[in-house]
Image (tube, rainbow, N blue to C red; front, top):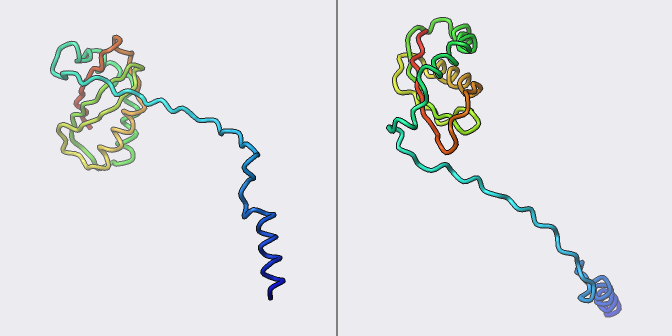
Length: 138
């Protein structure tokens, strides 16, 4: 039994329980720098400079109306209207959706918003994050 304990101690001493000897330096792992995206400044959405041209947004929506007609095909019994408001970012992409008024099913509303997410608009002036809205009638 004594021989077993001594050999175990010697074995652990040689192996070192998985630790590296102190004289061997381990190279530091590279650090991945993650830059946080700064949120846009909070702007007064009622200000005229933050309102996207209604004529421009109406033209874009009418031009891409087939996207929204697909929702009618998915939900054929839905008839009514909904008003949606959204923001246009610096690359012309849409975000921050809000349904202001609707008499349509929530699934139908989600379908319309999914189509809006894929819709791009002309980019606004630098530093401006305009909002626009549209009344969809189905």
